[in-house]
Image (cartoon, rainbow, N blue to C red; front, side, top):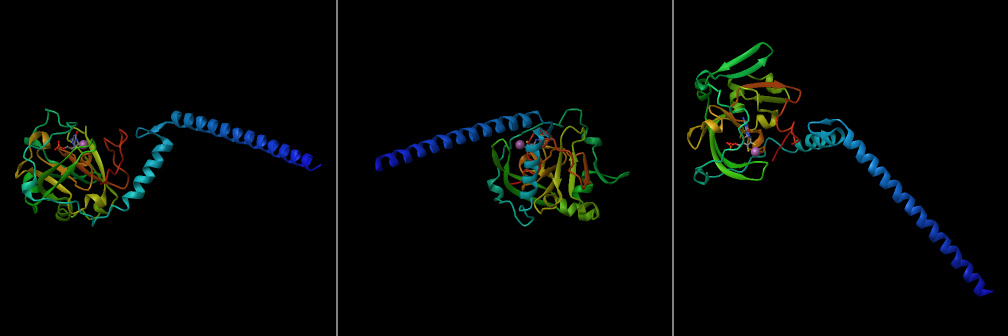
Length: 254
Ligand SMILES: Nc1nc2c(c(=O)[nH]1)N[C@H]1C(S)=C(S)[C@@H](COP(=O)(O)O)O[C@H]1N2
Ligand SMILES: [Mo]
């Protein structure tokens, strides 16, 4: 009698076990199928800025979220001038074609539709000069300590009374031929280390380093330091950005 009861219990638990195993396998297969269906849906989605829509919106959300912590008070580390390298690497030549004529170059600052400032290098050099030595970091993995000088963008905005414009969320910039372009959030643009730069190692910028005027923005990766600026504009919408369109993070903050 005792023995029989024991056998019965054993049978029941074996039955239960088999039942649980089957359930576990069903759940397993349902999840595999869900993963395959989900992956295929993602893959077939239209892409935005070179990433499937859903992935792009998660990336953009993260970008917006973390950009809130990159405050204006955070300064990039600086170095003595003696630490700056003498032969500075040249990287990226988009928008740097030979058809450029420095003699006729003017910086165009679009204040409003139909209201553009045209500035010469003398206008820009007349503003207070600031220099910086910092570790310039490229997204490709290299960095180098380099020395730059120019006018702080915040000083430039003040001198040209761009108060209303700097209330907007973004600044857009592009090369004279419009081939390279960046969009930068206003807090980073107004950061005290962000320069409209015209000198490297105490000399005018070399041609391939953005002569006559480039951006130097130490709180961002090198992709945002646009060389040979032709035009500056202001907007509440994100301006087009060359590397964002090729899948990189819009803010590219450090
Ligand atoms: N007009 C223009 N600006 C540009 C680029 C470019 O291809 N064209 N490349 C960017 C990248 S990826 C980097 S790392 C830096 C490199 O600056 P450098 O050539 O002075 O070292 O410039 C940035 N600005
Ligand atoms: Mo770069």
